[in-house]
Image (cartoon, rainbow, N blue to C red; front, side):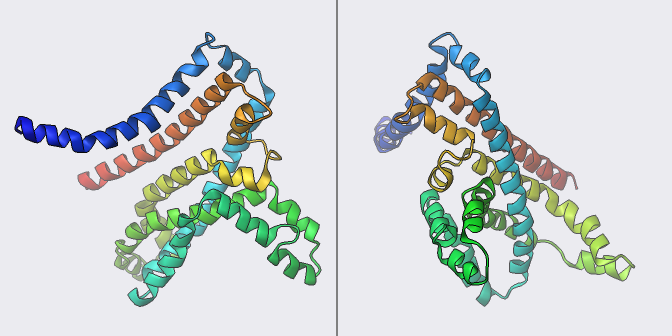
Length: 278
């Protein structure tokens, strides 16, 4: 590469590098440095704070619950899509992918308008004798928050599983059935081992998203549910300005999410190695 060409490439790449530096490297560096400015006292106070441990437990419970529910719903949907004719698959895929275009705040407000105390679905259920207070109580609880997360996590699971399910050789199941294996036994012995790595990868991916999601939780349940993203918000909101502890909570969120994604990537790498050796 000539010097002139290298200069042009550098000039074209400069806006991207500047944006990365201003909006990723510098904020991340601040978060990494802030908790240690007081000799790590922020971590000491965080470890001794009961709210932190309850928030960590609540976030992990929410991540596991929403991730498992999304996978359990996404697997049969992916199988159904794989069997659909192409003329039907496109519109169905459009409807399934639509929740991915909404922000977390829009999803939360949609659930409030549908399942809140005066929501559309709540009023319809009230005509059938279901108390609106009962529906609203579920909506503004950890259960309702997990349901809101599943709204945009299930499409992610479906999109991850669909290529694997579509390429799966169903004649293997037919051969197993012809040899005397039942449908359930054939699925567990043949299909599940093939799909299991992708299922595990999907679970950890959506669990990491649920663990760190912020906008949906803030708009739907406010501070009624103790999870780490909302605890972080309370440390930097108008009612609090403990920036070192907020940065410490951010590092915990980053570490847990990185650990989840690391496990997912490890499963994916092992799957590729297994396929290569086979």
